[in-house]
Length: 468
Image 1 (cartoon, rainbow, N blue to C red):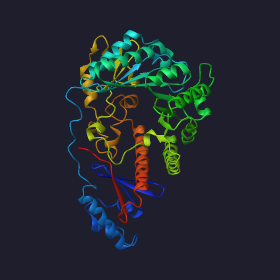
Image 2 (cartoon, rainbow, N blue to C red; image 1 turned 180 degrees about the vertical axis):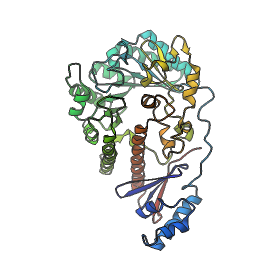
Image 3 (cartoon, rainbow, N blue to C red; image 1 turned 135 degrees about the horizontal axis):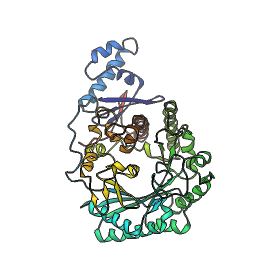
């Protein structure tokens, strides 16, 4: 597929897949591109005779051909570069500080914190080994990321403190820049531990599912009491203390709240940095269904309208999945590579077992080794390393291939029993989010450029760079 058309209400956009160029177009161009393939101008004129004025169609086709000549429309396929270094270099490590949790979230992929096994807390010894594993695996790479995860990592706060202090010490000794992130449900945050996390520049991912009704139903304490009030109290403490920076609110929507825009907008009462993710699972009442899809499709449009309106009104908020830079995107190798699970990114359990990522933990066939033995399944590393988007049959000609990186391996494995076939429902969601993101960023770019330069009668173009 060489181009992809998309629209939101009366806003029409076309993406040139291989160059990454994005063009705001009018309704006539949108319709013409449903027929015109870059080679059939005369047939297109004949097809739309009586539909649009002939002079307008001819002018529009001239504009399209001008973009073609510039390599910004119907641009050809290009050889995909070698995506990775010959030897994998570790970029990120997830430390499962606690396989335990004080909540009993209904959709928890970690089985309410224990990942289907026994409840356990990481020791200082295992934590130190994990940090050294990351430093050694990162080789000459300067930047490294460590995620403190659970369960609820604040249930093991003494070890969290130890890890942070140890990392900052080793950071100075090695000259590396190590970014620390911690995911928390917020119920155990105090003035003291918030100050410690702030002083040590720990990025926080704050789990909030939206309105109090939604959050309390999906994220209760044992005994079914809702956790919203305690969570929000902790989150506001954090956000206020760090002046609204270095955090984001991360929610999950399910079959029980497919009208999730209300939940996203309610989160603005707490903070303005937001991500909302679809639940993933099998054979559970909360799993998204085919009946939910038309609702989700319209909800992303509804959220996009709200995002645009607030941005233009000077009340912006950040929605993670609407962040697409149209002026200078990452190189194609990075975009094809994805998250790097299983070769650039690993997860460590409290016992020191190594898995491809945090969501694979507990799937024993994917255990790759231990911190004491190192990675034993070298063939699995190579398998993950080479299973990028262009190796997946369903992905290789998809218009979104340079944006999505082939989707989540863990979700694909859960849905299909293999990472070689993408999770189709997730693909639909991803493509819808991308359409809204591209349209929004194109419109906001146009807002900035309005009146600064002359535009074509039918097309404005903005480059989302594909660095080959």
